[in-house]
Amino acid sequence: MTKNVLIFAMLGTLSLLAGCDDEKISGPTQTVDWYKAHDAERKDVLAKCNNNPGELAATPNCVNAALADNKMAMGNSNKAIKPKPLTFENK
Image 1 (spheres, rainbow, N blue to C red):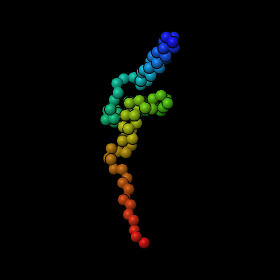
Image 2 (cartoon, rainbow, N blue to C red):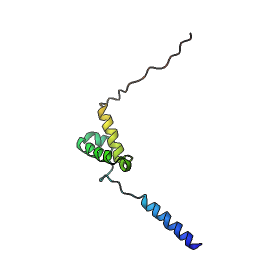
Image 3 (cartoon, rainbow, N blue to C red):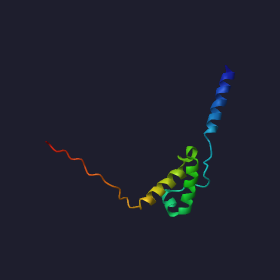
């Protein structure tokens, strides 16, 4: 019985340690505004993220760099196309 408990404790510890993977993109987490102001760094991070999306796509730096890139592409205008409201006519 104690052998089973020891095995489960070891498996639990190993699973916790497996989840403690360091972020693959070195350096501190940068904000979206920071990536908007630093074009070369944004492109570098996006290249790394696109090269390994399975592991890096959800990391904070990849998300922030992608958001900054999207905002830069939209021109920071926040002028999204707004659909007209639906109207229903009685026939």
